[in-house]
Image (cartoon, rainbow, N blue to C red; front, top):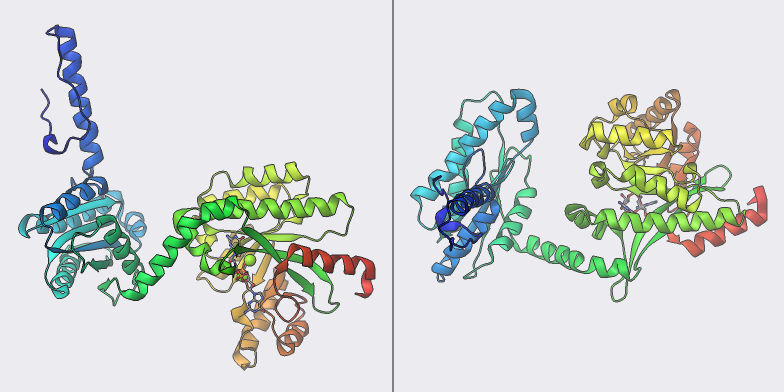
Amino acid sequence: MNDNKNDGNEKILYESPQSTDEGKQELYLYSKNKISDINAAENYNNLTGLPTLKMFFYLAGEMVKENPDDKFALIVMDITQFKAVNEFCGRSEGDRLLKHIADCFREYSKTREKTCVSHMRADNFCLFTAYSTEQEVADIAVDIKRQIQELPFAYKVLPSFGICASTEKQPAVSYLKDCATMAMNTIKGKFYADYKFFDSKMRTQLMKERQVENSIVAALEKGELVPYIQPKVNMLTGRIIGGEALVRWLHPEKGIINPGEFIPVLEKNGFVINVDEAVWEQVYQYLSSLLKAKRDAVPISINISRIHVYDKNLCDTFFNLKNKYEVPASYTPLELTESAFLTDEEGMYYRMKLLKAQGFVVSMDDFGTGYSTMNMLKTQPVDEVKIDRGFIIDIEDDKSKIILEYTIKMLQALNMKMIVEGVENETQRDFLISCGCLNAQGFMFYKPMPISEFDELLRKQEENGRSF
Ligand code: C2E
Ligand code: MG
Ligand code: MG
């Protein structure tokens, strides 16, 4: 009989056989082994043999129950750019590194009292321990980092640690993990920082995030998430040449909430996809009403979250909307923030190509805020560039002027359409016009407004014809 590696923790129950019949006995043994295999796979990481997150929660929870008077701390760890380790050094070297890290954690679970550890996934590990001083917990993180970096390895390995040291007795382990992760994310990739403790500022932020997460589903159902539209103008003529749909949460108690307060939270849990789709649907409804009424419709661009980079249904969603509302693809340019092109270059490249082939216009949002901007202009399927507000904010400065002027020249030479975001004053407007960049979006012209107000503006423009 196969040893049950995991007897003490087996969660799936089975009954002993009532019959002595040999066939049944064999079947029983087979099922028992199968179940223990499944349990082992669920509870222990295949590569490193450390408990999985599920098992870790169980072990840590038991530890809290058995030691109700102790204070506990949780450390999480992540390797910056682990993907690059695999790419540069090969998968087997990546595995060797993970095994070494697992050994460092395992050692603590063996030598330190009331301590358990986990290999949560990929390059994420964590440790849960009873503690008396914060320094003592910090020392564990520093020691693990030292041990990891002592491994002879062809790549500079950069671990980041987040720590949540609970002052409450009997804390909820999963909450500590969320807090430690939040702390870790504040220093990820910063080579000079070893670890970060979860603090009260982060606690307030986390509570805000929880509130958003808890109320977003109901808000969607009640139709509280609506697109506002910010007109885009030709600065020479003043004509509205299009608009951008920008989501607003019309909260019954808190009033109008801007996307900066909830989109980043929803990007973490994937709910941004539902919000985006709700917004897109409303934009399509509006465009369809304009076209059906034979009004002078203008393109209204929509924002695509970087999370959609991983959404395999993205193209189908747009093809369906386009067909359902009978709105030609060119009426909804797709704004995708510059850095999203980098996240999953191949998948994104493929999807954008497909959408372009169907007539969609792809616009690179926040141009100039990312890292490899220039190269992406060469490689990515982009029709339009939205120059970020950062380029014009200090336009009085001579160097800023030169950078902007030559950026515009380069885009013109590449035959790329462009628009500038965040034009707020005449100095900015006049300089842009002198450089030959005529299209803009900014508070100097219009702020984002409800669809009904935008519609009113379009109507006036239709009535006044070109003299608007
Ligand atoms: P974005 O796509 O770059 O949108 C432009 C932002 O700049 C908007 O902020 C707009 O109100 C603001 N803005 C425009 N002109 C000016 C100006 O002259 N001065 C200043 N200071 N700001 C100006 P908003 O509406 O708060 O949106 C912020 C970001 O949230 C957007 O940046 C976009 O990335 C995201 N977002 C907005 N709506 C959606 C949505 O429906 N889905 C997704 N995924 N993201 C959205
Ligand atoms: Mg945008
Ligand atoms: Mg932008």
